[in-house]
Image 1 (cartoon, protein in one colour):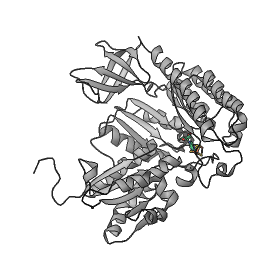
Image 2 (cartoon, helix red, strand yellow):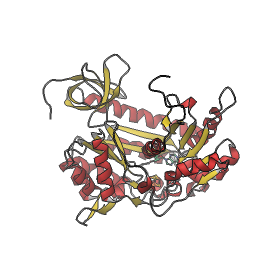
Image 3 (tube, helix red, strand yellow):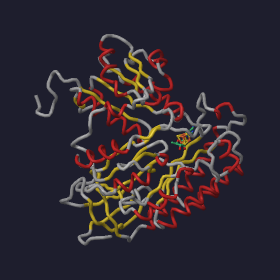
Image 4 (cartoon, protein in one colour):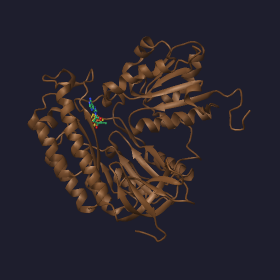
Length: 449
Ligand code: 5AD
Ligand code: SF4
């Protein structure tokens, strides 16, 4: 037996997460919990005794994918692993999943996965174990404490759920109402992540900037207060947060971008569309003007900030003039990067039954034009950084020998040939060239600001 293979008795597992960073975080917590239960991570996911599919329901394509993924888990010899479906498809479709895909053993929602060991025990007794509870006491207290072996960059979920009810979106139904995790728990988890090797923490929430709580002295604070407290932690060198709603960009959070050195100059602030008529139909409760004003204010305190966003093309009723307003807003903002999607009709959401659904052809055409503009802006942003000096946090190995890949403060992927350096190192570099999705950097011996 090879020394790194698990003992014969230990069951192996593989957690596959799709969709947003919240799912990545949940996937990590499930893996840690399974580890604490005596499971061992499978070297090759295809051979695992247990496969957890941690699913995404945000668009139809993502939601349908789970069924083909389940089908693919059947092995050549006809056997299959124990299959658990977790995440937002589990929450939205529930027991229907096990009916449509009888090989599924466990269905568990995003607020109930701390009960996975119990559900697996029930499945082992031959039951179909389904748990879609959204218990009042949050799952976090029941999960094992975090520890050693963290990557240099870690996620920390501080807030979950959404009360905004944008008319196209399933999140308020799958993730439930907005809740903020308590301050003391977050400080404790951040310390554990840093002690375990993390140097950068990204605070996560569907509406992360709606986080609120009380600090150690009982004073009411918002996300900016949490960021300021975390910035005092030795060993934690970089702080990021995502995803934010424009209406929750408070004065304090904007000010923090100008005052907290560890808060990285990057803001993911989805706008979805540039037409006020469409924004109203989306129930976004902000206008293009108020969005642009937030951007202006953040840039006033942090001129170099990189702005990112999300866009939806082809929302019901979107005219060519509405779409032009989105392109105009993109021109006015200037994005460093962005995500863009064709509108996907989600059953149960108000927009699904709106008149004037847009044809696939029109959506394809608009998405192409939108992405051409966003790609141009991303390339321009990367090119503008060529020649500047900055610091990289090295995160992973690159494709070439001796190559490492890290992130700049502006979240650009930067590759560097740096013999003698290791993942987790923070290094001084000069950006030497730019591509569409990354930049090349050269290591420097002198310190940079
Ligand atoms: N169709 C297309 N895109 C959507 N998003 C959310 N719901 C839908 C939908 N029904 C996008 C939004 C959101 C991102 C996470 O996914 O842009 O910000
Ligand atoms: Fe969905 Fe809107 Fe909530 Fe974002 S703010 S999760 S798009 S409902």
